[in-house]
Image (cartoon, rainbow, N blue to C red; front, top):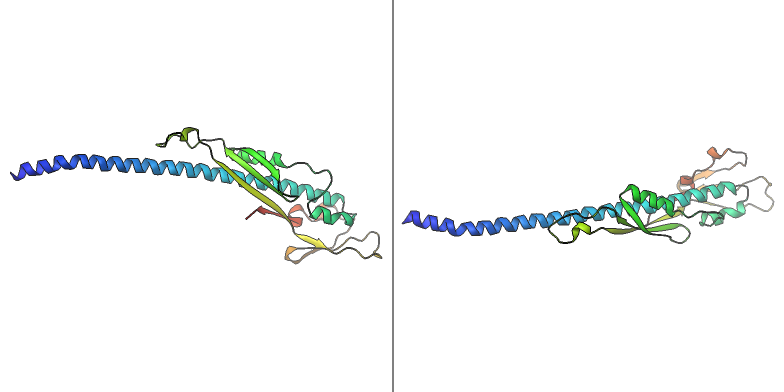
Length: 201
């Protein structure tokens, strides 16, 4: 009698065991799908951040080049530090390069004012096959904005200043540049001395 009851109990428990195992497997595959989607989104955000920073850094380098070209004309300096200079090229090509290096494609790239870029990217890789229908064709989109902050300021020259005198450039951290028109370019402030580039908050 006891043995027969034990067999009956085992027989009744087996379907429950199968249901529990199937449920656990379903949850495991669901968590895997969520993980795949999260990894894809993280990849998209990394690509967007890198692309926006690259575009902003290219614009920073162009502004620094314009400042060197106008070094002897301090009346042009403020406009350059404000992000305005003649002959600047669009920097979205750098965003496209960096996005491609991070397995993504630029869907939109635009200037944010004079001192920044906003970039939207889409991953070239899909989320992949999973228990969730449709993920095999899903791609992630993310957006990032990078901005350029001038690091330096200066006081205009006095009216009676000698003709070959340049303003003292004072930069963040207390760094001061006493500029000499005869200095070679490599001794002048570099782009990273003149401007910070960072992701917008």
